Amino acid sequence: MRVEATDLADVLVFRPEPFRDDRGLFTRTFDARDAELVGIRGADFVQDSQSRSLLGVIRGMHGRRGRGEAKLVRCAHGAVHDVLVDIRPGSPTFGVHRAFTLDDVDFVSLYVPPGFLHGFQAISPVADVCYRIDREHDPTEDIAVAHDDPDLRIAWPLPVTAISARDADAGSWGDLVSRL
Image (cartoon, rainbow, N blue to C red; front, side, top):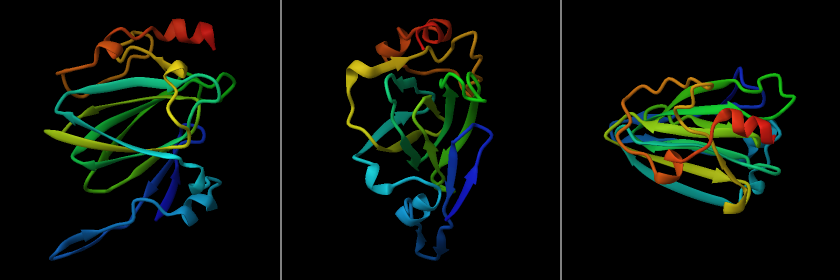
């Protein structure tokens, strides 16, 4: 498994090397030894979650206040346009967003450190996204910014087919920045 830095401070891509043959494929989706070589303790993850989304669905942009949460995100089935926004005051990439394609072809996992908003759009008929998270969920720490916030100007690849009521009511980037 290769680990690659990105242009967002502290965000890493874990790129497995699937073995393919006439039966299909086999790949590791997580290796604690590889993670520990870049300072991520596999034992720190306490929860695995999965979501299923249909084509065009957007989930996000979500984060956590306080000490935030780290997560390892991958798409187990289908494909998503995955977006991160750095919300760490003082970070060299504060306010910068980047998009990554996660799919069931390359099996890339994205390490998202604490202090990021995260969201994605399903770009295949069905997309299953798996999250390995380092903290139990506490809804009182949830924060969200609208996926279509004009200050962030995130370019989503498809028209939005569905979004949750919570995400539709999410605040603005300006409101979030004023509270950080």
